[in-house]
Image (cartoon, rainbow, N blue to C red; front, side, top):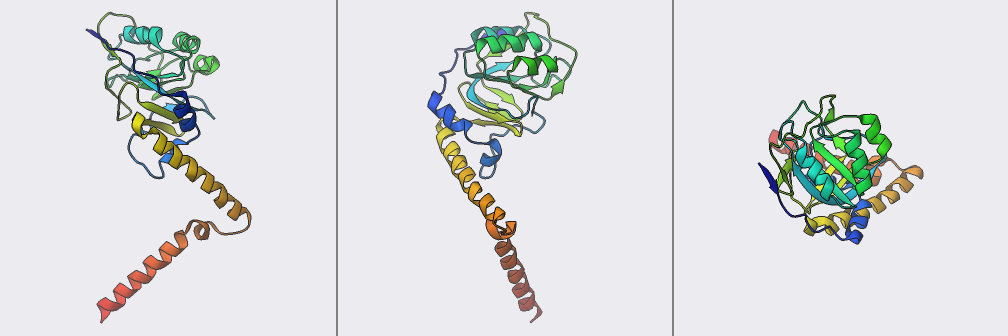
Length: 231
């Protein structure tokens, strides 16, 4: 059975532009939730995208629901595909990537396999997946869901969520959390430039970031504890 839900509202362009300035790895300095598993990997280098999640639940070998989604996707959407544990069949290949480019899709993220890696890179739509497979889906008319709650890379994804992805990984944020996370990351990245400048000036890394002082205090505390225990 196919379940077809409404498209979510797209996130404001100014919010996405702000989010794209942030690196997932920077947000990873102060947040641990929302990150997909590390086996969901980019097939392109030097890429970073931010967009609105449009979700697809695509079990088994039936690719019909992804065809439907591609007919609905809008410029700036990120297709996020739950393969429901399917580990043999590629969800999409070169022709689908070309259709995504024509539709203005910002990226495609698959908790599963893809094919035609060279064509995916050629067509220029960034794709994240668990790897390649030469076995492809068919349109079988069995089942699938468009714009429902899914799981991708171990993270719950809702239609309309914010997606931030680069070659280091994929992060899902609820819309209400987007601006705070992005601003904190941008501030952190600006502070890092000061760190780099101090390193260029000859200072040592543990002194710049404060880790030497933390370790020295921990060693001193351990010694005091040992001295107290020996009395």
